[in-house]
Every structure is written in C-alpha cells, then in structure tokens.
Amino acid sequence: MKYLCVFFVFFITSCIHFQTIKVIGFDKEKNTVTFMGEEWDTKEEYQKEADIYCKKKASLIKMIRVAEGTKTTVESDKNNNSTSAKTVPIIRYQYTFKCE
Image (cartoon, rainbow, N blue to C red; front, side, top):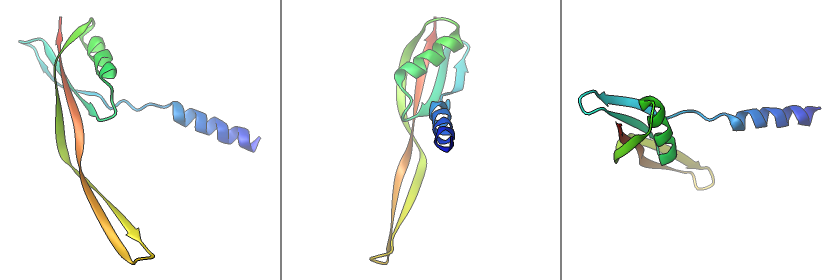
C-alpha cells in the first residue's frame, strides 16, 4: 500500500504541466498578439495559445529570443575547499501572431 501511494503521488505530479506562455501585448490596429514564454515552450504550444486567443487560426509573424536578466548557481567542493559560481542569461522567447 505504501508503494501504491508513492506511485500515485509521483503520477499526479508528473502529469501537471505549468503554463509559462503569457500574453504580453496586443496591437488593436495591426490585429497582432505577442506572447512570451520559456526556453522549453515549443512553437506548437505558442501556436495553440495564439489560435485560442484569436478564436481562429493565427499566423506567426516573428519570433525573437530575449535575454532577460541572469541567474547564478553556486557549487561548493568540500574536498578541495573551493567554491565556484556560474552565471548564465535567463532566456525567454517572444512570438508575435497576426489574428486573421
């Protein structure tokens, strides 16, 4: 029974997908919508969100890669008594779609 509970918790948590694609702009004159998301969001996920937002098929106009700040990870090596830090950019993507 204990293993069944552990399996159930693992199954539930692995099925949860957090939506990271968000609308960041809408141009009423040009009838375009811009979304921003994470590196791991796929083009298909952006297309799906655009189609839902536009209530019909949307056309991709442009995609840009944006470096939005940085993140630093620090690692300690207790054997060598040393610490190292690595700073990398936080990458996000912006997709702009035209609502037909």
